Length: 488
RNA sequence: GUCCCUAUCGUCUAGAGGCCUAGGACAAUACCCUUUCACGGUAUGAACCGGGGUUCGAAUCCCCGUGGGGACGCCA
Figure 1: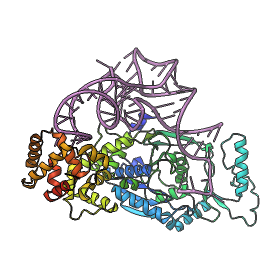
Figure 2: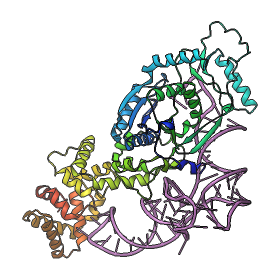
Figure 3: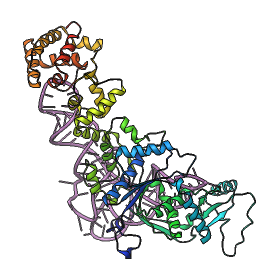
Figure 4: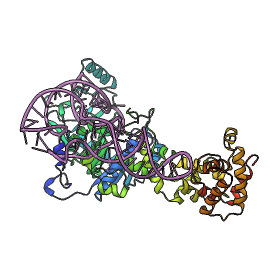
């Protein structure tokens, strides 16, 4: 791993001026642009930022980067907030909206213009396109050629009439920009690779790299934890920060999450809202645990609570390479957390999901009790709801199933059982005995009676332990359903 | 094309030069448990991308390939 050695040589966190020797209070931020829902990659970025702040008793800030007016929507803002709330990633400050900070940005741009660290550029978009095309034809990295950059002894052309200039940052032309990335180790860029990027558009609105820098500075962000795709922005942001005389925060760039098939996630392919996981019956703690473990590790630990995660979380055990999402493992974690979930909670979830199928649980058996029978047999909440369904709606076995299970011998057993059950003390152990005795008396092996019984009661040949099913269903319902068996 | 990042079982990962006969987890396979289906338990198979260095010793450090990814916008 490049720079692996130096990456580990870090002590306590100190501020940008080491000689202060004062541990700075950690401040992290999650800064999504509201152009869509919160997907799994964003959720992990948020989780890590949140955990880092929590770990160090710091502050976690939510900042909405909505300067792309054309693509930002209030619905997306809400979707992001909903997603974070579902996951329980609470922020301490914000949400701040960049569109509400325009005055501040204008002020900083004016200062930079006055200080000469930024300048007006009148190059039209068409000229820029032509320049880019030329450079690409020459197989060069396309970049602005500095034609409006003021230079000692250089005469600038007169500003063309009627052109609203953009503002460009005067990037250093020589030397290197380097930082110690908390995930990837030392990264450096030659300034000659960078160009004078636009910080304000023709209409005066500021652009991304500029807003980020002003906000990170104003919000005293100490640790920028964000996606890998921002590595290339970092040298520009550092240069800007330095032009502003602002301290440079620590950076930690998280590599991307690939889909189940190893392909890049996109809206067309696999990138779904975290709320879809709610929809699909996942527990937030399972998603959180899974995400925590995707790209970060603590030895061999696989299953842990968020409390534990916060105590363990650190930046130097984050993987530098991309990780492939594995639904199988998420499913396993989900099943695991389902087994631990309180019956009341499961009951509430199942009731809600059943209601959406038009099934009411009123007048049926106790939902929590039934849920208890199924919580270690299902993989998600939708499966739980499906499993509970026949307890609240009398089943109608298919013709094939009836033919297969309701044989003469079975029907005889069911009739005998019905009589015995009518007088039985309604308690699992005794119910189990009743089934066993009836089977023995009728010359049936246990499955030969228990399976038709399951079909009669639930419309399915499999179920939890038959005595538990009988108990939970209740005498009245059991007798009713037995009576309803064709020719029983 | 240029720049930047990256590489351990199918997947997520442990690994800080000797604790490595490379560990754990998911998945897979087998067996056990069992009134069905699951749960659970036990066991098995499965990896250091290739080539050069450095070193007594390399999964680990360096270089070069190769594969994968990202960026090159008046998007964020």
